[in-house]
Picture (tube, rainbow, N blue to C red):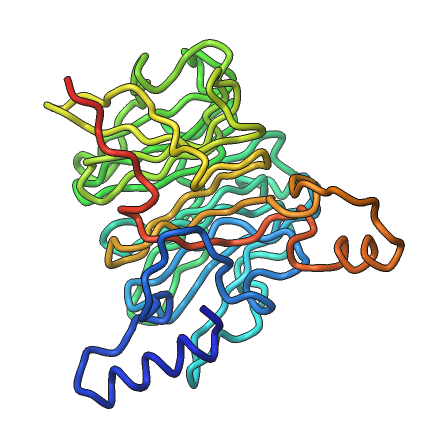
Length: 324
């Protein structure tokens, strides 16, 4: 569905007395992945990690010089029926900053950075940082500190309704290159992190990112190294049963491709999976040789093999839980 059609559908629904569509929503079903806000949010740049505010009017995302030579956090506002050109977030633009996520209560905006902790010198690893919501807006960035941060790197963090923080890290005790860890919030601080276990983490796997829904009923892991991978990085889901995370299930070829597919988020209403994919020129099959004009247009286009942000209805993306 094109952007003008989406906005027209929302206006017609509002005129008919139906609730107005959220800015990330569609009046028509989205049962296959589609580019989100092509030309404004999804462009020929390398974009990833789309995080919406609770009202859907703000979108935070990351842009990178592939692969991860430079990472910066951007912010786009939905105004007058259109997503605005993303601008560099006020707290980003100097250091490597990426993967913004909102806590379930929307009081913290977490992100990953190699910015200096205290001494003004570049940090050799990546830490979890956050902004605190205040009456006047957002606080200055704050380092999450020990025991979550330390002499290791973290690459993604998200917190749930009960305050549990999930993050990916090469924290000591990891089973693979990068594992999913959790830390519970008690008495104003996070506890010593614990590994989420063998159903999620294993030797030879790199669990690069993890999204966990606010109620901790499922997690979506972006991972390398699985035997059933469809190509590069794939997304996997684990459902929580009787307090235990179940073995990971590949989301399958509807969502995953031969390219890197990663950076899952779910919209505030729980309806849409927002994710990043590098599908396009490098993975599309061809039956005839390129012409120079075709090749030049393709590598300068939106689907040039750099990251784009996609959306699909969540129930179309997730496989059903395996029966015990």
